[in-house]
Amino acid sequence: MEPCVIRVRVREGYDVVIGGGLLKDSGRLMRAALGSCRLIVVTDSNVAHLYLPTLLNSLAEAGYDACSYVFPAGEAHKRMDSLSGMLEFFAGQRLTRMDCVVALGGGVTGDMAGFAAGCYLRGVRYVQVPTTLLAAVDSSVGGKTAVDLAAGKNLAGLFHQPSMVICDTKTFETLTPDEFANGTAEAIKTGILDDETLFSVFELGDARANVKEIVAQCVAFKARIVEADETETGIRKTLNLGHTAGHAIEQCSGFSMPHGHAVAIGLAIIARAAERLGWAQVPIARRIEHALTRNGLPITTEFSPEALAEAALSDKKRAGGTITLVVPKQIGDCALIDIPVEQLLDVFRAGMEIVA
Ligand code: NAD
Ligand code: GLY
Image (cartoon, rainbow, N blue to C red; front, side):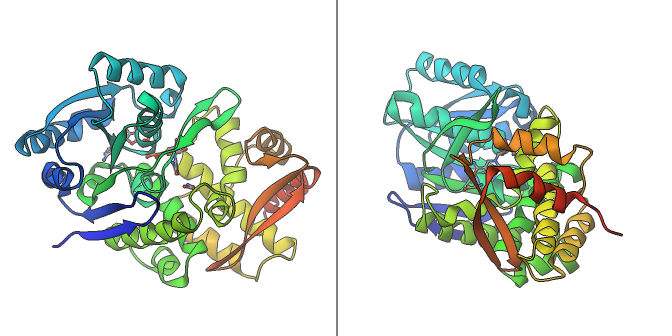
């Protein structure tokens, strides 16, 4: 089947190419987009075993001189010392401004390799090759890059758009059910923001069977938002739906809870709160809870509203005395609401009281 190509029309626009089996063709696709250059592939220790040889073969077939840098897998390694190891490797390889970094892996790899590419020599090009559903539907598009600090998630980073995204949906076949579900959480988030068509796949359909269409709709939606607001001064903030509580849960768990699972609980909390505080149409909370649980995702947490509020208020989205919440009003319609920071605990309490 023909790959689907979605153009992201930011200052230096780029294509997101989506299809089954694209990894084998990635060298040819990159040559068409990048021309001649040297490439450094950054990947993690799990993905290296699974997909690095196929990618390197394809790059060699297309005539590229490429080498690889492998770091230990997991969110616990999305931090400054991993980033600094990457930058030293780039310098040791004498990577120049003409060259390019390739991020092969999930959101952790993409966020870090993108950050490294954005600051090495004040910015070199990079290509995203997402291998998790989460990276495909969200993190590989839009140019947000970051590492975590002890004080919170993604606290150091920059905006740096990729030069191309190549998404081989066949790579999702090796994801565990839990890892697949992580990506489903971000795709359900997009369904809530975008429209009933996408959301109903998670309410009624089979996400694995419809994965290419899901990725394409999520990418097309995200492209529209990023084109309208590349650096998150307005509408892009809506992509943080479920993330205020979600990031707090990740932080309270010492980052042992995966991002997608934490976002799922965050979506359920804000949906229940939105109904109880009169911001949303009933029965949005029940519909969102159903879509999440049906796709193997959690909707409650053991952490208290107090612990989450404390963690959330150390998060970067706090601006002065207010915090911006993304509130679902109905499927396909979310609002940004600024509340005083003191009110956040009440919002979390409203969203965490489970009524049978
Ligand atoms: P991840 O990159 O840690 O990948 C999850 C796990 O799956 C890892 O162990 C990885 O080695 C493994 N893996 C990757 N591809 C695989 C495959 N095809 N088969 C088997 N195993 C595979 O995590 P993630 O869930 O992809 O991404 C989460 C990260 O993304 C978080 O750090 C989050 O903050 C970030 N994120 C960024 C943005 C953004 O816009 N930049 C958006 C959403 C999330
Ligand atoms: N994942 C949120 C964003 O890219 O803005």
